[in-house]
Image (cartoon, rainbow, N blue to C red; front, side, top):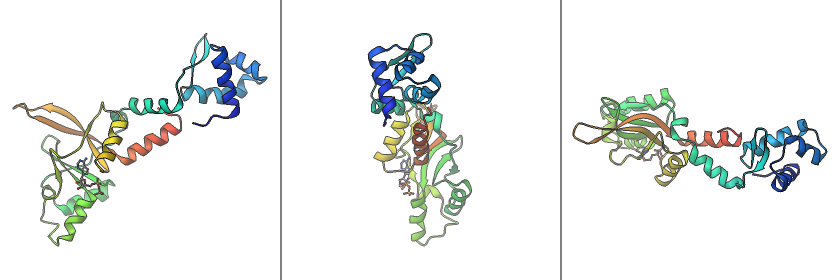
Length: 213
Ligand code: ADP
């Protein structure tokens, strides 16, 4: 994060004199409090300075890069996930293509009764199939999808950093967000409750840039 000259100056004052009130900082700089307000907002919003009521501003001691890292670990998948678009495993390739267009997504999740994760269908899975010259009205997506246990997923309590790391490491565009249940025979069942795509991650990036989160 690039600070302006004035913000650097404020930072120096707070580092040496903090805790210090906004009024006192304004006096040191021969400016009004109103003029300083946007700078103080940026410095506190970014976490470089902390403000305590009736005490004033003090230096948090955190480097901007470190703070961004902390934020990325704090924002949880559950806060940013999208609605999952799911199809049954016996859905035809044709219907899967239509669903992708209607729902405007690039990845579908195949689920069985109860919404439990069975597989993932990407755009390229569907394209690859069309090269074979088979009937897209007959073949079910179950034949072409990436199947459990090879599906990479996240849970609501995971951080966005963890989700982004999985997207990159596994070179995929989207991850199902699941909730784990123990089935009758002790087998774990993964209910699909959301979707995280590269778009969600890019959106978080934009929001962080705007000072949200
Ligand atoms: P695209 O096909 O548009 O390049 P992806 O890169 O996401 O989309 O998919 C590449 C391959 O990885 C496909 O075969 C797909 O089935 C598989 N895949 C996609 N998402 C996942 C996931 N979350 N876990 C495991 N495999 C996945």
